[in-house]
Image (tube, rainbow, N blue to C red):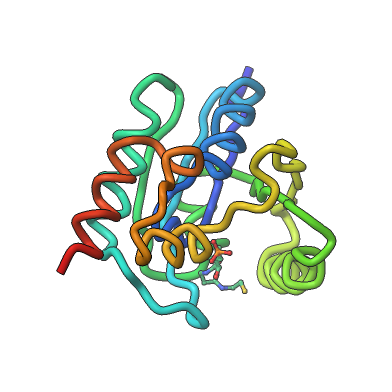
Length: 161
Ligand code: PNS
């Protein structure tokens, strides 16, 4: 029987407990999960791709069926490359919906074979985003409830200049 394989794409700048929640729950339901750092042309970057990948890898060490990648191109082309026909995205609130609809519709136009599935982020993480965590980290606030300890350290180092 062929393996069930899904891609979890994102900017992950940096990974938060919200992302990790989606990755862990997906890893429970698919044979293989491919987490992929891609470029979002409307966002700047705090961490470079290598740093983002290292932070993700350190966060998913306990998940044996999760691989972490970086791809410089279209998400649907990455899906082809790893042989995945499912994209998983986390949905936090109604405000995410419009953006996600545009993303999914474009990906469907680019490759109608690929389905996007949405998973509701656990309510305790529903207000977390990488940008809001970075904003409070820049003011040296406690971010330990939002990101794993190694990400907290990386953010502290980044903003401690
Ligand atoms: O975490 P994000 O920023 O919401 O993730 C968005 C991301 C990176 C998945 C999206 O911008 C993306 O797929 N970028 C790669 C380029 C692409 O395929 N664009 C077409 C879909 S709009």
